Every structure is written in C-alpha cells, then in structure tokens.
Amino acid sequence: MNKLINNTIVLVLCFVGAVGFSQQKKWTLLECVNYALENNISIQQSELDVQQNELNKKDAIGNFLPTMNANGNHSWNIGLNQNITTGLLENLTTQFTSFGLSSNVDIYNGLRNINQLHRSNLAILASQYQLADMKDDISLFVANAFLQILFNKEQLKIQQAQYEITNKDLIRTQELVDEGVLPRGDALELKATLASQVQQIVNTENALLLSKISLAQTLRIDDYENFDTMDVEYEVPLTNILDESPEAIIEKAKENRYDLKIADANVKLAEYDLKLAKGNLQPSVTGFYRYNTRASYSDRVLGVEATPDGTNSPIGFVEGTGETVLAPNFNTTRIIGGPDALFNQFSLNDGHNFGISLNIPILNGFSAKNNVQRNSINLKRSKNQYEQAKLDLETEVYQAMNDAKGALKTYEAAIKTEEARKEAFSYAKERYNIGLANSFEFSQSQARYEQALSEVIRAKYDYIFKLKVLEFYFGIPITDLSQN
Image 1 (tube, rainbow, N blue to C red):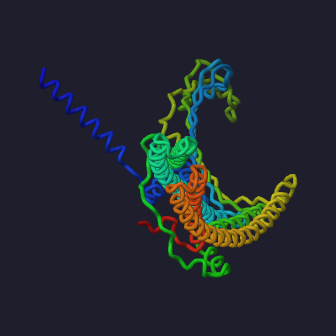
Image 2: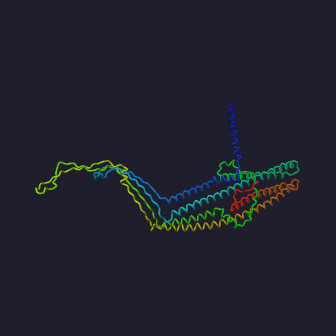
Image 3: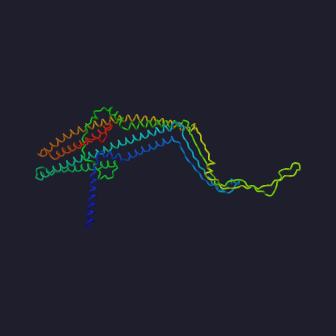
C-alpha cells in the first residue's frame, strides 16, 4: 500500500513538473517567426502551389515524349450468327480476342510543347516568389504581434508600479486623516485614483491576453493560457536607414521585395500564354504507328474428304466406237477441326499501320482567334499591373520612411513630455507632502505622469516596428532587433 502511494506521489510530481516546464516555455521573436513560417496555413498553401507547379513542369516535359497505349478486347457473340465452317446462319456462341498497340508523337505543333515547358519553369519561379512574399508578410505580422505583447507587458508593469505608489500614499494619507491633519476628501480622492488604476490594470491585462491569443493563433498554438513570450526589453535600434534617400531604398527594395518580382513573372507568364494561343493557329504534324492482331475460338475447316456414292456420270465418248465413258460420283465432306493455336492466330492475323497526319485549323468557331485576343488583353493587363506594382512599391517606401520619421519625432517628443511630467509629479508630490496641494491636484499630476509613461512605451514600440518595416524594404531581416 505504501509503495503504491509512493509511486502515485512520484507520478503526480512528474506530471506537475512537466506542466510547470511547459508553462515555463517563453518564445523569442525569432522562435515565433520560424514557427509561424513552418506552421502557418497560408504558407502551407503557397508551398502546395509550388509543388503543383513542379508537377505541371513534369507534364510539360512529358509532352515531348511519344504516347503509347495498348488495348485488348475479348467478346462473346450469342445468337444468330453465320457459321464460318458451313456458311449457314445458326444460333451460335462465338468468341473473339483482339489486341493492339498505338503510338503517337508530335513532330510539329506550333512550338506549343517548348513554350509550355518555358511557361512551367516561370510558373514555378512565380510560385516561389509568392511563397517568399507570404513568408515576409507573416514575419511582419508576427513581429508586430510580438511587439504588441511587449508593449502591453511594459504598460502593465508601469500601471502596477503606480498602483503601489498610490496605495502607499493612500495608507499614509488615511493615517493623517485619522489624526485630523488632512481632510477626509484627500483620502477619498486617492481611493478614487486607486480604483481607476485597478480598472486600467484590468483593461491592460485583458489587452495583454488578447495580444497573446492573437499571436498564438497565428502560430497555430492552441494552448492560449500557457502561451507567453520572452520578457525582454528592446531598445530603440541604432540605424542609419533614415539617412538613406528614398530612391536608394526603392532600388534596394526592387532587389529584395517580391511584389515586383511576382508582377514581372506574371507578365512573362502572360507572354507565354499568348505564344501558346498563337500556336493553336498553326498546322500540326503528328506521326503515328498502329499494330493490331486478332484470334477466333471457332472451329475451322481442315480440308475436304471425297467418298464414292455408287453412281456414275458420263464424262465423254470413246473415239471411233462412240462408247460412253463413265466416272464415279463422290460425296464431299468437310473435315472440321478445332481452332488454331491462339499465338499462331495472333502471328498470322497481325498487321501494322504507320504514317504522318497533318491537321490544319481552318474554322473552329473563332475560338482559337478569340483565345489569342483574350491572351493579348491579359498580357496588357499584366503589364499594367507590373507598372502599378512599381508605383505601389515607391508609395510604400515613401510611406514607410515618413511613418518612421514621424514615429521617431513622436517618440522624442514623448520622452521630453515624460521628463517634464516626471518633474511636475515630483514637485506636486512635494507640495502634497507639506500640505500645499490637495489630493485632487496630486492625483491629476500623477495621472498625467502615468499617461506620459504610457505614451513613451507606445511611441517606442511604434517607432521600432515602423523602423523595422523601413529596414525590411532595405533587405534587413525583421528579427534583427537589439535588446537589453
């Protein structure tokens, strides 16, 4: 019994330890990005597109090879059929076996096979660009969600610290109120401030939980309750990216970003689609070969047997005497045998057919001509989309640079505001401690200081993210963040 209890305790402790270990797992930004790239559904879909296009390339290569097909047939004919041994119509059951081999090879088909192979290679490249672009988008989304969690954590720390300060001030103020030194309203004002801070803490905790759930869902992690990120504090990166000209960043983005590459690949795909459509207007030449053989299971006539019937028939006269010459009459009987050996029949009955066929499209309901025009329109549309992608890229770079510069100014202004609010709060606290300011004035100063602290954190992480977006266009990975 004691042994069973001991074993149970050990198992429970192991389970608790395992749970504790799983709860201790905290994800870094790099781990989050890598995990998302491996498990995100959109990325998996893009990977399937790459695999699909690789199979399409195999189809295009296979178009250069001859086709070869074998066919076989075995049939039973039941009912009124001609007996091949007697030539009479009889109710028979006959069997026949046949098989054949056919092969076709394209000699010329408007260069469609060559163009299809080139198009397949381009389609693979385009899908790879699409996959890389999807990974970039997911990386940015994960980084933004990760920084949002860090922002909420720091926000919560500040609010909790301010709560402790307010709570201590409330205890000291309540003692002075009880001694009659301060009016009761001062304590009530601090209680109201404390209640407001509790509400802010609850809201931030909810925001933190929601931000964790959002990132966990992106990573396809179901254990929302235990999911957490590494408690790190990222410093504002030291970078020279803002010293670069927009033109230099745009040129760099053209080399690193996949939006433009995808649009360019789509133009080339449309060009090959047009070539394929024009190929349908040209004559095609095909070589062919056919082999066929057959066998029957019916009886066959092996020969004829003659038997005298006892009568004679005149066949002429003897010269000089005129005597009639008689010859015996015979009854003939066919000699019927079984069917010939199967492989002998296949060998005797086989045949070959080969040649070249020419197909010239003349009238096909305008479908080929319309398809050429349709693909011409699609090519123009793809070129327009490529030009629009270049304009969009330039707009995005300019927007990212303006956002980063604006976020930096906001962050610098928030720091100055926080410093001023800190001094004002210290001054208000001194005045409150010596009785020159009431609790309302003190609470207002504290609330403004808390707001300034929160604004510094918000501006900091907003600037970090927008700076990383700008660097991303410049080819710097999103995971390159400096931390304490």
